[in-house]
Amino acid sequence: MQTVLSRRARSVSGSETLAINAKAKELKKKGIDVVAFAAGEPDFPTPAYICRAAHEAIDRGETRYTPAAGTAELRARIAKKLQEENGLSYAPEEIVVSCGAKHSLANVILALVDDGDEVLLPSPYWVSYPEMVHLAGGRVSVIPTSAESGYRVRPEDVARACTERTKLFILNSPSNPTGTVYPPEELERLGRVLVEKGLWCISDEIYEKLVFGKAVHRSIAAVVPELKGRTVVVNGHSKAYAMTGWRIGYAAGPREVMEAVANIQSHTTSNPTSIAQAAALAALSDGAHEIESMRAEFERRRDRLVELLRRIKGVRLPAVPEGAFYVFPDVSALYHKGAMKDVADSAGFARVCLEEAHVAVVPGKAFGEDRCVRLSYATGLDRIEEGMKRLAKLLS
Image 1 (cartoon, rainbow, N blue to C red):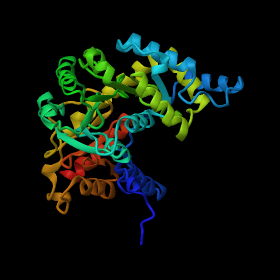
Image 2 (cartoon, rainbow, N blue to C red):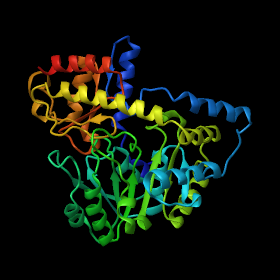
Image 3 (cartoon, one colour):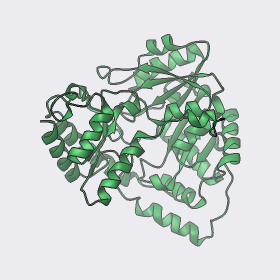
């Protein structure tokens, strides 16, 4: 009997993050207190000035379709932001606003990747990258990185991984799940290899505002200007402005590519919500204080979570994450021991943490590294203290 589902639908795996969140919610419905380190969204409310802008847009009657690629005002403001903050010059026509950065990424991959094209992906990677490539008909070529290197890919490894079918490299800095931030000198070496090999680059910069200590965010397209013509920069409002539910992301790149992205979007989702676009425009016009306040609080949480993790024997965290709001410790030394005596992988580790300690973490297998688990510190310090107290007891 012929299968109902398409090959592309069958090629996509379910989200481990959503699965863990669903199990945690089931426990909560039963009245069980779960400490959730799984969420990939800020726990702060959207700043009041952004919410006011949305109300005002409704009052003005801005509730109709906009151009599929976003309003002219918002695209122009994004172009100004990219020029002033990132040193990148784009015309508004080279920018497409979508329903979140995830939507932007999917559109760009569909626009660039043909059946059989290879996409280079440093591991650990964000869970949705491989699935988006599979949906486009492409093949993923994973380049492993190590904790010792700060999970930063080496340019020589990228060069070795290239074949005649390699078309695209995906860069995520600051990184989900590792918190890695590439310094400018490493971006330059990496960019030179991409130029030499004639590859396209997607630079996912959604966590750009969340960097800590001496780390700085730079866009690879600005560090290596020769690469800009083959780079699409993806960003959005979800992380920096605590606007996850508003679903606003954007991509900027060469006009031919962005026209294709706009065309794809026009035939699938059409425009992002008009009210959310008005709020996004306001967000880019103000908010420096709110952003810094959230960033500083994330840094405090990171420091405490790292301190508590390093007290647990068997948990390995060589480097302190420099950005985003995740830690990605290696817990494989605890497999087959103590409370984890029947555990052989990160999925089993996460299951025991949830069932026995009521602490939700995400298996590293979903990110391409089965020795690790991901903990998000997008939760209050009191919950971090409680969650780590439970994990320390479970793993002692």
